[in-house]
Every structure is written in C-alpha cells, then in structure tokens.
Amino acid sequence: MKKKLLSFLLATTMVATLATGCGEAATADTGADEPAATTEETTEETTTASGDQTVGIAMPTQSLERWNRDGSYLKEQFESKGYAVELTYSDNKIDQQVKDIEGLIADDVDLLVIAAIDGESLSQVLADAKDANIPVISYDRLIMNTDAVSYYVSFDNYTVGKLQGEFVEKQLDLANAGDKTYNIEFTAGDPADNNAGFFFNGAYDVLKKYIDAGTLVVKSGQTDFDKVATKNWATDEALKRMQNILASYYGDGKTKLDVALCSNDSTALGVTQAIESDYWGDVKDVIITGQDGDVANLANLVDGKQTMTVYKAVANEAVATLDLGIALLNGETPDEGLISAAGWNFDCAYDTESYDNNVAKIPSYLLVPTVVTKDNLEKELVDTGYYTLDANGYPQATN
Ligand code: GAL
Image (cartoon, rainbow, N blue to C red; front, side):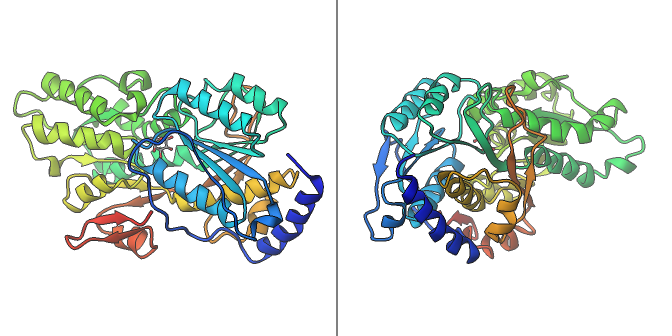
C-alpha cells in the first residue's frame, strides 16, 4: 500500500499490458517437500514499474496436488509483472496458516491472495490485514465471517457438482431407467472448505429425483453432507470410509455398486483403492467421478478405473487473479468490466449474488469447469498444453 505515485505509474503500464491481454500460461516446477514460508523476489529492471510491491500468497498444502500448481502459477504470473512474491504452504494445518498469514502481514505485503484451509478460521488475522489496508482476494475457496475480503476468484463450484451428477444421469440413462435400479454411494469433501457443500449439492440436486423415485439406491443410507464428508479431502479417510461401506452393504458378493460419486480426485483415489481391494466386482464396472485432474487419477482414467474428472484450468484461475490483483493494487474497484478489459482467452462470469460469506455477498469471478474422460483427455488436457503424455500414454502435468 505504498507510493500512490508508483501505483499511478503502474496503472499506466498495466493499462498498456491489459490492452495486449495479460497472463500467459506458465510452465513452472512444483516443490516436492513441504517448505516453510518461502520468500523470493525478482530483481529485474521490469520490477521498477511496480518497484517494491509484494504479493503474499497463502496456499493450504502441498499434499493435495493441485495447490502446487496454483502456487507456482500465481507466483509466476505476479513475478512476470514485476511483483515480488511471498508464497506459503501451511501443511493443511489451520493454526499454521494463521501464523503464515500473520507473517505476510508483518512483512508488509501489499496484497493477500488466500486459499483457506478452514474458511471460518481467518476472521481475526484478516482483521489485522484490513487494519493494515491490505486488500484480500479469497482464492478458490470463500473465506467466511470477515469484511476484509474484497473479491473471490474461483470456478463455478456448484456447476462442478452438477456436471458430475449429469454425467451419472447420462451414463446410466436414468431418465429412461423404467424399473431398473442402480446402487450409488457418495463421498464429499472437507466440511471446513466452503466449496465442498457446493460440489455435493450440485451433484445431489441432479440425482435426488432418482433417489426419491427409487431408481438410485444408497445402500448405506448416507445422503447428508455431514455423513459423506471427508476431513481434509484426505485419500486415506475416503479409503477407510468406503471400505466400511463395502463391508457393511456390499459384502455379500452379489449386491452391485454401480456408482461412487466422489467430489474430487484425492477422495476418488481412496475410493478406487477401496473398491479394488474390498469389492467383489470389477472396479471398471463402477462409475467413479472426480475433480482436479490429479496425475494418479488421470492414469486411472486411462486404465478405465476412474470414469471422469472435472478439470479446472488453474493456470487461468491464476491469470484472473493476477489481473484482479493488479487492479486492486492500483486502488481500483473492478467489476465485470475487468473481464472484457483483460481480454482473457477463457470464459469467466462476474457474480455478485451466489457467494455470501455471512458478512456480505462477495463479488466473484467464476471460471468454467470441464468434464474430462478417457475419450476427450488428449483434446482437453494435452492439446491445451496443461499435460503431456509419457511413453506409456499417461498424462504428466506440465506445471
Ligand atoms: C477444493 C478445490 C478442489 C479440490 C479440493 C481439495 O476447494 O476447489 O479443486 O482441490 O479443494 O484440494
């Protein structure tokens, strides 16, 4: 929040850049181990434009694959425009993330970009950010119960779930099932993640009518979000729960499991492992859904074990966050105009109604998710440059 003159300079530079379309797709490495807070600054001349403005980026963990990509895409995008970046990963530990954000505030960053581990745990530390006049972008997951968040960037989370539900509906032709019935089990995400409810409701709202009609049967009876949620989106939690369900309701060697609707890939991986090890039938006969395009899950897609994943191009989520961040650092109050001005080569909606964090409806930039199956994987993931195929035909992320 320094040097008004400087941000004016920046503004002129940026407008020039916007006119030419911002945010190139990035190729960056992903860190293997769980680093402590890392601070890296660029020193090139190009930094003079934004000089010593620093962006603090707080990611949940590196143990869930996508956040490695988010962190490095965001870092690369902001550094490419001359900003210094402090990037933290908090090992999915809520207290650690609060400490990391306190550290970023103490380092006097000019902007905070935060993907919260627990959307309800940051009110206090963000009050400090507000006192320090640091604008906060809620990244991918909405941060609740605070007036310090000015904007939200994510994908259309409800549509992610809706695409999973509609995929099952189409695969089984449920609308024309007649008196056929199918067995389904649900696995949702972390209750502390505001997205998890949107994903689950998006899918359940499509399939509810078939469950009510008896066409879809949930043998475990577990249809409430709290019952099917998975703490920390943890693969081993999802594995254990599905093993219990298989033993209790599908252990007779004849009760068929037709669908395992999982909200994301880390949970789908555990559920797939449980089905492979504990289910009498063939995992390839079970429709398994996912989200994120994790490498292990894409290999399962190629091998026919997982049936679909909802891919979200986080490279574009980083681009949208960059342009929003620049506007905020310029002291602007962007609205839908940012989308047309930025000239992004991806779709994005401006939504001021759907995301209420209990203090206000947060203006949101929502990107569009894509269904990926074995059949369109190459077109959607490889031809776009997000993944390459290794010698065995398995997708490897380029970031
Ligand atoms: C959600 C995110 C998903 C998934 C999940 C677990 O908030 O939107 O893409 O990755 O967290 O990390």
